[in-house]
Structure formats: C-alpha cells, structure tokens
Image (tube, rainbow, N blue to C red; front, side, top):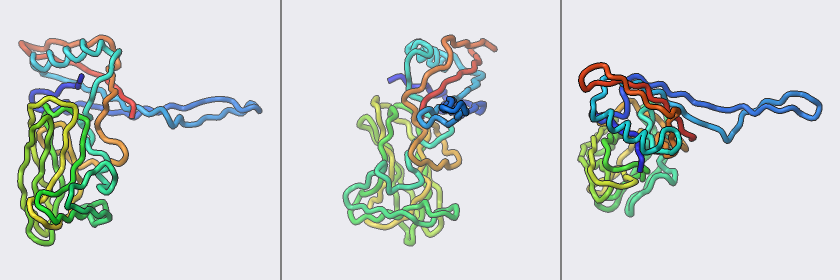
Length: 262
C-alpha cells in the first residue's frame, strides 16, 4: 500500500497547509438558446498544498520514495487528511459505520458538551463490551484516538486501537462532568486496516461524544464528520516533478500539491 508518509514527529504535515474544495459547473444551452448552468453533483475533489521546511534527509527520502513508486501523478496513494477526522459519522454513532459488540446497546440523541444532541449513551451488560469502527488505514503509523466521556456513576472506560494482530489500550475514569480523554498509538504491524473504539471492562452506562481518530500523536480540536471522513485512498500528486531544495546540511524544503475525489 502506497501511503503519504508521516514526518518524524508523527504528523502528516507542518503548520503551512491549505485545503481547497473543488467543484465543477456544467454549462449548456437549452433548445431555445438560453444558457443553463448547473453544479455537477458527481464531481467533488479536495486539494491540499503542503509547504514543508527543515525536512530531514530521512523524511525527504520517504517522500521521494512515494513519488517514485506512484510515478508522479500517474498512480493513486492513500492520504490521511491532517485537517479532518478519520472516523465516519462521528456526529451520529448509531449509523452502520459503528459496530456495537455483543452485550452492548447504543442510543443516540443525547446532550453533548457543545449544547447539541450528538452524543450517545452506551450501556453494557457484559465485561469488555463497547463500540468501535474499522478504518482503512495502515496500522504501522502514529495515531491519536480521543473522545468526550461522562457517566452518572464513576466508571472505567478503555480506549483502544488494534491492527495487524497488535492492540494498544489505556484505561480512563469517568464522572459526572464531560471530560476529553485521548490515547496516542504507535503500532508496528503491517496491514491495511485498523479498529479503534472504546469498551467498558465491567457492565455500566456512559455517555460519549466527539470520537476522533487522527494520524498524529496529539489530539486537535474536534471535527464532526458525517458520510465522509479524512481517509482518501485515491489521492494523486498534482505534478510530475518533486523539487526538494537544500537549505542546509541535511535540511530541505518543498511544496507538495495533491488532490483526491471524495
């Protein structure tokens, strides 16, 4: 699997990134000669322009290796948008994108920390039951899993991520006040998908909101998602030449442009 590489910090990019949504207009003339302009509902693309500076030799080599593997703009690769949430339907956990384990029930429409009703209530009657989502992304990258949690009674919740036969988890205590918890993950196994979610080690009831998975070591502000996520398996470079400019010993800079349908 060809994947846009992370930097040595674990981030996909530095702070200088611009994301643009591209749509297309269809223009034609009616039989009476009147011009008709309509938005093409089937053409939607996102474009990213990423400025990288003080890139190390190792980081440069990874980027150049991907560029050679996909032959510039010729072939597709996986891009994990650093400005988005890798979960689908984080705003509605009752959707089929989310899987409830045996012994767990989930209800939506619960008051969330932001004054809305996008939170959900998870009730379990068996040990180790919970909710999770499978994401088409390689396990051997750095991720951060976060969520807002609360419970009427003190409760323990395990956040976890698994992939390629490996699992990383961490236990958190919940109480009556909404609290954001996060887990930084670094798996080493190869693969094409990961599973991320939470479970209750003992039967109980909690409310959860704002689940977020990101391809970076620390959580950023919450991004609500609906039918799409920040996983783009059909990204392409927008150029056939990658220019890495030397700015010092073992230090480089470049501007990378890529786009993908969504």
